[in-house]
Image 1 (cartoon, rainbow, N blue to C red):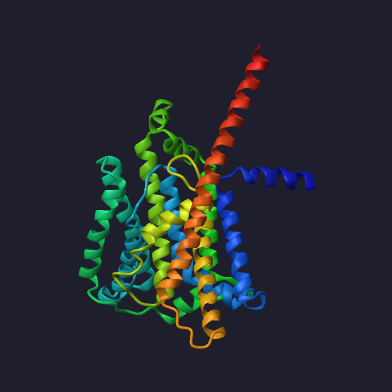
Image 2 (cartoon, rainbow, N blue to C red):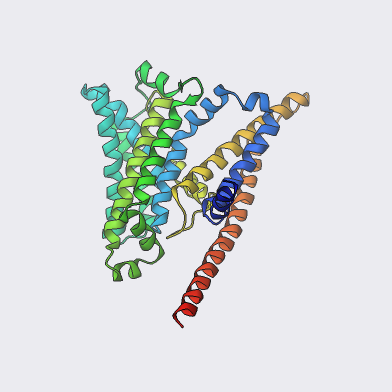
Length: 350
């Protein structure tokens, strides 16, 4: 049993998500020290942390799927707002049942993601410039549909979303777990292997019979579904609509994925987005409680909110540097392992 655990640990150390996992644990330890264990390890604290940040976490996981293919989508943040607007306005303005309206909102997230994929994959437009432009197109559509923040969500929806199961498990975490389970299944399918092959080298993938465009379009569909879920979670969390919210999630999801150990093309997994987002969330939470402690401990101390951003962003930048250095070492270790296996095979042939 001990030997098996040791082998799994050694195997996990070689995985792309290992660095993000270590950064996440370091951020958690920092938060425990600042917030104190008695306040950190409470059901209420976990519930608030997870329910408020599930939209960002899901967005990072969706972005990770694209990055495995060597692609990106800067418009993922405003897509959450689009799903939010549709989920609010369909029942409010058209009188459709809430369940149907939310299902249409989820599908709308997939459709918008497919549009981005069509522009990038089929029309071969640069992904960064294309999705940056699409951000403003979606923002304009959002404002046309909902000119000002408005609407409401039924009490049972936001109360359920903000609740706990069995007295300790946040309901929002169930959505994250569902996405992880679905991806765990997809990863074991031929498509799961093709996405790494296309991300690593599309030409080589095409040479062995894989259609890179088809794989990339499927990746956009999966990303759209995850972002659609994130938009519904955002709606349930805020219990209202806002056409201009969450725009920054696009760039934050990219940084979170890289913090989690992602790289563009053929390297990483959806867990990288999960750990990277967790690191972002926990660091910002720790800095918030640190400055609250300083203002209460030092009478008359006034701290500009920009200082909180400076400290948290500096920690995130240092974490990003550590991730880049470690990821390079991991890739070199993996490369050397392949070389050893190849040489061993040559020896047996002789």
